[in-house]
Length: 392
Ligand code: SDX
Image 1: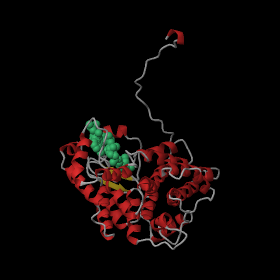
Image 2: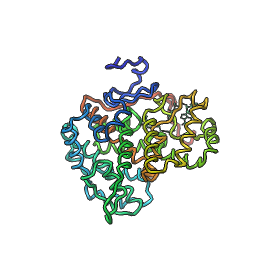
Image 3: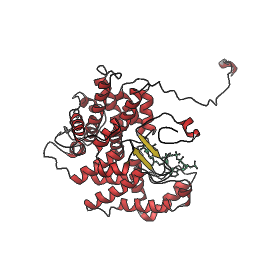
Image 4: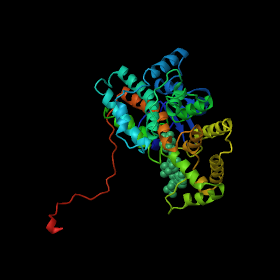
């Protein structure tokens, strides 16, 4: 057994690495961050306090929290040279393509001065990334709509500041709805970390070579972009819009079950969860709350999502395959209600997940580590001799 949990030998032999950050029980639908259940954190905590917990392993005292928040605020601006990177993109570039580029470019600004063997330097890299991701994300949105970039306003809290940079303009003072700011913060919190998922494993593998942490996070962003991973939240909303009406749900469920049809029900299924993703439950409650407070509880997409969930959960294929809604199933409905365009959904996921990527990178780099080197099962040709072209 490892620590207080017991794993079967088969699992331990395949486990890629040990970690103390997040625990998932896929069969029971349990997600703990440093031992704290995700639903309690979503209800009682906030994103930056959860960042502190993931990075340092304990909930902060009020003084520790205030210091952490102020340190993040000191890093929300980006080097003004970064602005010129945006001018190299087409206006219709996907914001995730922009984020891969500009986050990777941060390594050019902080490479020489960064010694990852020095704990203080590792801490500063963490603060810079957590603080700058919202700024860069909002810049990628502003660039795509041809509006001027908004500077961070450090009088605002983390999620308010993000919405200010997304929707504010230099012409008028930002008016951020507390309901939307709370919903945004809960979205970031629910995406903060999820053990050894594809993008976190990418960050760890890149980091195991000693690469610059900003470049490692850019690698994580690239891995997250895929529709099977973080790109699913964008794909869920496109799917709900394509379904268009509850009368067409059965048709799409049938397609998802058809082996010859590549269509999968976006927002359903998970490699680890064979029960409800606990984040999906919290997300569903948040969607009800936010839409009701905004007076759009009759949003047709929410109605389609709820009916689709009901039908799928009663369907023997989904029951047999243990397919349940995952974190991405309801998040898009909340993001749409906040006013976030679909193209920005995965960017939002990347902003929230940055702390998880950094916490795992820091956990690995701070301990004794070796370069990752996945092995393979070779199924190619046995050794054979070269044949000249006129003899082939
Ligand atoms: C995230 O790893 C993480 O923790 C990721 C994440 C995180 O926080 O980092 O939780 C975030 O990526 C959530 C997943 C978002 N992706 C989607 O919602 C896309 C739709 N889901 C599927 O693409 C799929 O469920 C995956 C990619 C999520 C998981 O794929 P797996 O590992 O192949 O799923 P599985 O092994 O459990 O599949 C079992 C069976 C397979 O059929 P058979 O080969 O047994 O015949 O179920 C089928 C799958 O084809 N199946 C689906 C399905 N998901 C799995 N069939 C229809 N619709 C689906 N959504």
